[in-house]
Length: 51
Image (tube, rainbow, N blue to C red):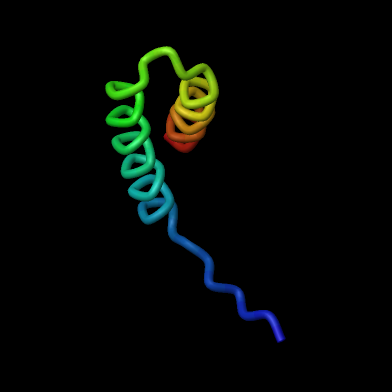
């Protein structure tokens, strides 16, 4: 049995902002990591699309 535990738009945006903050900290430690940059860009576009 699967139960839908959906998020509100506000909760989703909060999750994305938290992830972006963590990605930025990781990029400060490893600025040349292209994979981190790609993930950060994807998350940033998700946040912008939600507005």
